[in-house]
Amino acid sequence: MFFLKELPTRQMLETYSERYPGMNAEAVAEALRLLRRGSLLMRELDAYFTGHTLSQTRFLVMIVIDRELERKSLLASEIADRLDISRPVVTETVKALSQAGLLSSIPDPEDGRAKRITLTPNGQAVLASLLPGYFAIIADFMARPADRTG
Image (cartoon, rainbow, N blue to C red; front, side):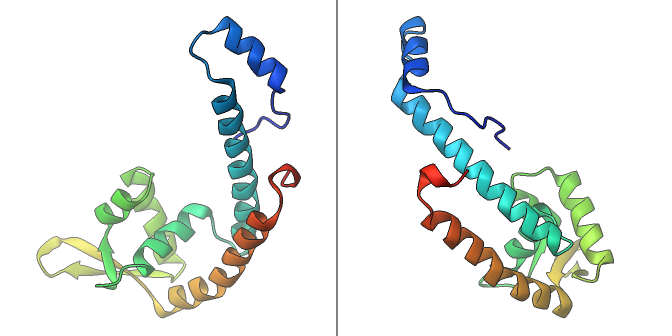
């Protein structure tokens, strides 16, 4: 999350630019605006997921499995490779989603020690019920002028 509510003024940034050669005030201003907007969107999405007893991490684990075109399961290591989270976090998230009945695991036919993670029918239904609201939040957020998102 980006916690800076009041972004620096152009004058503030130009003062820094004078003090720190090589600082591009316009680039910094744009980056800070992007960080602020992204953070506001993430807060809306987090609230949405919380209202559905999920987290962003749990949603992302489910969606990376669902979006596979050629297969219906992934190894935990493949899930971690597709997300910007550590393997231990993926392992704990998969465990929690499995306990909630949203994921299941089956032995990998090529490596008996590995497990392939798949969405259960209940997991598919939960994801299908979440996606319309998820897409609506993003569409609504992106339709707002940047100066009115926060």
